[in-house]
Image 1: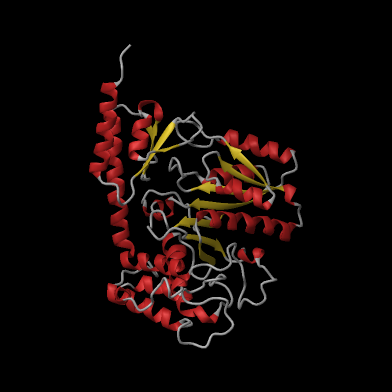
Image 2 (image 1 turned 90 degrees about the vertical axis):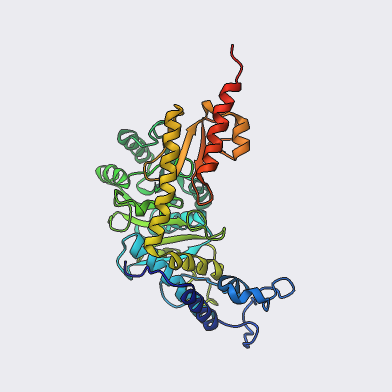
Length: 416
């Protein structure tokens, strides 16, 4: 680990305080040109006694703006202190977690995985247009049927076609011949440039795509492609699996990665991460943003610096070893639950290194769904799966309650 360390609470507080002090102080500095200020004092009292023991809350009240991308070029100097901590967090994720070489990536703390995924699609659409002078009709997105809906949303916004590849019902895997057939059909319709979205834990199943399958097929068919990894859920758990595939920047075919900090990392909602190799993000430069010091290279523009500091604080309060321990506790709970389901002969899908268990719906009643807030695959009346996610708040006793209710519901079923 080059960048990821564990800091004491004293050091964490000092570094956040130093970052805030290096930023503009809207309470005391003469700052006449910014269309922003500290949070409204009528609601957010910045002299509240408890704030002295809450460095992150002090950051929220200070209200730093992290507009732009701070891994490339200049940024707004008024928030340079908190920008530096965002860069530290990105170094941990890009280099120590996803095996990129130092200074060979760009990225930013986004508003979530949806924005980060659309940022990737936007970059690659413009890359193809800028590099090969192609029309949008010649570009297509490829992803599995289990892919997050943000990809369909991005395709709609960007005006490019999205091709959905079916998966096996039991294994949730893409068949190579099926993938090849869909791409051949797309080629026959004039598609020549492809944006691949490969999943590192799908939202419903936690299934993991093999990006090298896409590489093999697309290379065989001699078409241009870029690969984006949607690790919105799996990005803070799968890389700590010792048996992982090289689904990171050590794989030369992977160009960008999405992570959601408001899932496994337990950051505030509205916190995601976008990472890409150097030389790509410039394809979405908004030249019209001339009043911004630096380059506006992000989809969202202005964004909360406090959310970026939350990511930094969580990472450095754990360090790599404590994080590894936390993840493995969750995986052990998941293993235990799967063993209980096996004993009850309840069919389910689970990737062996993920904390998502998706049970077939035939033995789960709607009453149990409602009582335990199980997530169905669909709400249209044809649901075939229910999802359980072993997050930090899910204890063994919660899972035992669910299992007991399932067994009780079987005994109460009328016999015919």
